Length: 398
Image 1 (cartoon, rainbow, N blue to C red):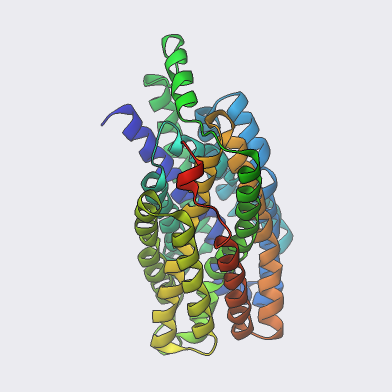
Image 2 (tube, rainbow, N blue to C red):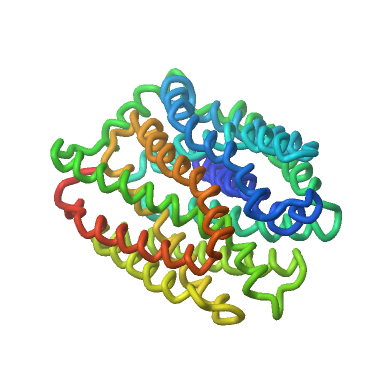
């Protein structure tokens, strides 16, 4: 394998771990800590908020440091830091302690999206498929969080889900550092070539178009963050309540959650291909329309019908993820991309942080029927915004 391919593999593994660690607690809270700590689901899940706040707030400084210092150096810190934080979380014995530890996980998790995605698109003319493949790994992290954590809960306990996977991440970080030392990214003789590649990689777009597109990106990013967090965080609890006929253990709930997330993850490959070959506006609007339809259908469903519709709406939710990343990659100069992705993900993860207490409030007051109704409305707003996008094939030279 060439250096670029190995680097891309590390970036993909990093995306997997990023989402995996951020969602271990979602399954632990839903399937174990409610009984072990004597708290309701609505009382417990707000303690995940510090992690998601850190996930958003530190994205911009992480991107700035990466642009000024080293993207690959920041990725090394990511692997080791998030792994050590996960191990620390396993020692938590109270909600406050676990909230603090999840905050550390979120702090290091914030590095990935502004830094890793900038590295994924760097030097590529067509970014859709690269971002889609990378996105599949991230979504498989979402899927495996429920599956692996459910398995650990039923076998060795919830703490081992943090310890074992944390140590694995530290090990991968060490391998990544060794790889970087053996295959340095930019030596003195490569600096000019990389700078030229960055210049060729930079778009030339009118200011008015740029403002309009970024307004749409930020608006749909915020709403998309709410949709993504509400579905991925709450799905294990949704399945515990609605698949009672055939999912009566933590492992089975984890398996069905994994099934849905893993099948849905591959929607990004389809969407990545489509945005590389067709108008982004049409693809975006279609994905948003499907979200609205399937969320509305989910309101009253249970049993096998709920499982099938969950697969359908998660296909649409995961399918949306690479679209905004493609838009940022097309609209922003290469040397600014880590910061641009940082801003985008500050919005995403800030909304995701507020979504956690929102889910708790809606579930505790009305249940998941109202949540899915609200998500259908949010998806309709994303649809309206997507239709306002200009034809980027005519305005971008990237």
